[in-house]
Length: 562
Image (cartoon, rainbow, N blue to C red; front, side, top):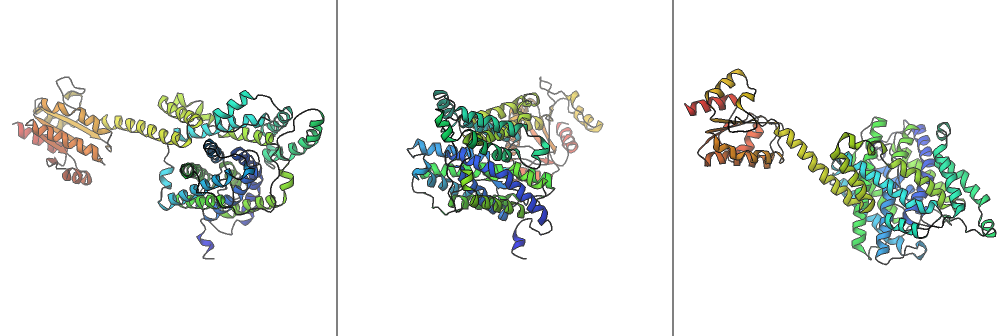
């Protein structure tokens, strides 16, 4: 089977477990796909979430690099699509799916995002995407959870809202007239998804249980005719779902391309982060190792085709992946089975799904939003590290009130700067100087072997000894530069970097400047270093007075002063 061998992790030894895992994952995915579609595109959008689950789930499993991963619409991706819809509405595009204006544009952004993900995989960027600091990931995911909660408050109360968090909450406050039948549906849904005993939810997931129980109850208790007879407004429902399954639809790239390009890039980056983090979870549970770059290509192919078939973009879905693995799924067959089951449902259950209340889907998403929020880290981050907590809370607020992609970029930048500052402090802790003129370290405080201590004492305070340890990045250059002026107070400078395994370019330049400062002031300078690569780098930068050890440097200093 040479062609099937090209599928990462494919084998036929676990077919029974893969089929069971795929079916179970599909059961969980069905209500979530409908809910995410409705949340992303508004009334009438539920079906497009199901389209995305079918296409992305199948192709990401077939071509991806995480064998047991199940892909489909997720919270971050649906929130991002909702942001795309709001951006297009701001430039005058009608949000009405029936008008046929917004959907081709949104799908163009989905295709662009998929192509970007393929490019990320080809350029082998997968390993870099997973290097995002945990404080940033936690803040971002918690922000996504808050956005989901804020956007679903309106549908939960039967009030129509559109746009982002601020616009949605503003509309809710101005038009606060709850549909009490929808509120009743929402309360029933929340009761089921939060209170279903574990022994039951192990066999039938609580979101699906809510879908199967609350939908017929809403028809019996709150049918449109009975509500109108009692003078109440009807319950908002997801409406008619097209029959016949997937259909090809050409996106519209010609209008508003700058907006679509940016939206596609955001979808690509967030989808990549979401998928690869889920891949790490899958590795931990299944004791396997994923291929990050291949996973990006698989996700990209799935999202590109999803956009061409009017499907919501997707990513690796953590909850569905975990359920798949725990149910026996181990290979890409499970993800493909999950999509085939959803396709069968799509073809045959359209009329039934049309009666699903949007308040029910909102209730399901309230549970999803609360689960996405990283409560464990959110509530104790300030006790672990104040700086980490500030980064996490800042990313959370930027995600909710500003922009998803900028929240991640700014968070990564700030977190990395704080990390470099911390590393630099560690790197410079070993910088010691014999400085009788009031420096931080005196000759008596320097711990040296007896022979080297004797050699240093013979110099009678005329030698400044700097010792640096660990790999020196550009952050350490500042500390070296700050001590440069001390060279003028001594006759000889000894810079001990024998314990430095790696030297960055900026730190190398700082060392070169310090040696040059000594020469300019008619002082002698020695650099003690035994690492071949570090010596070669210093030599290329013109540092010539290099000796193989600190003792050799001290012996040369004694000789120079005698």
